[in-house]
Image 1 (cartoon, helix red, strand yellow):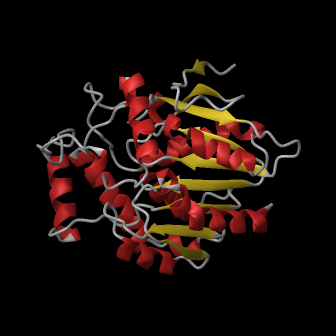
Image 2 (cartoon, helix red, strand yellow):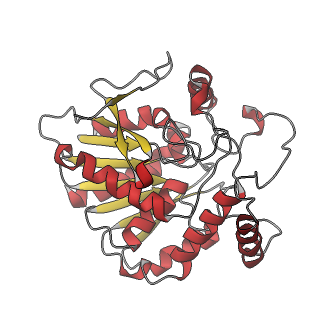
Amino acid sequence: MAEPAPLIATPAAPVPTGGAAEWFVGAGGARLRAALFPATAPSPRGTVVVHPGRTEPIEKYFEVVETLRARGFAVLVHDWRGQGLSHRMLPDRLPGHAVGYADFLSDHDALLKSFAERLPTPWISLGHSMGGCLAMLTLATGEARYAGAILSAPMLSLALPGTPMAAARVLAASQRALGRGGLFARTGGGEPEVFETNILTHDPRRYARNNGQVTACPDLALGGPTWGWLDFALSATQVLRRGPGVPRITVPTVIALAGEEKLVDNTGGRRVAARCPTATVVEVPGAYHEILQELDALQVPFWKAFDALAGKLT
């Protein structure tokens, strides 16, 4: 029997009714957290597996869970290794660290195997940012259990103003090789971020709600990326841009790009999308990076695209 894991509730973000979290074992024996929210519809349309972005815990997706369940789906959400309440790879919990992408793919396989018997079919993969990158990477490396995928502002190419991609790859790889992979890739940062200067969402209510979850459980907090994380991200996106897997993807894949994107490179994302024979690109005008945390009106194109995809699959 699976060992229960906690879910953090706040007044602004209660745990969706009927949902429960548990621990499962990932690559190298890492203890990872996932939460299943059964469908509320008498006849479920299927399951949406949600892959959060960097820094994002399960709790940040409670509202998305309710939106998907209202559409008739069961929802499975997980904490990637290195964030949320899942295994952190450094003694200090705060740095956002990673060691390549192979363990992420193994963890994903372990996630699906742990929950498969409880997930109504068909399965739809929904990934945001880093989670979108890894969701597409699973498809590009042969994952065949999903009927389709929709990616929110996926990290298909990094935005590196003033730094050529090749130079960034060499720098990150060399820092890792010199044993500095666990150090922050940048220092400083100036004043703490406030809503007025954030580049994630235009919605002050959702911004405050998400910060309140971390205040309620400081263990959910995650700081800036390490050299190891940057090396992982550059390596994973290189596989999507240049590797043989993306042209072999056969399931419908929707790529939603934020109109006011400031964290990932939309131009590079479009190039990756052009390599995928089943990809459809959807523009989300006016949205910052976190499309699913945006103002309701700005989310409309994403959910319209989701409904169109789900309509084809269920």
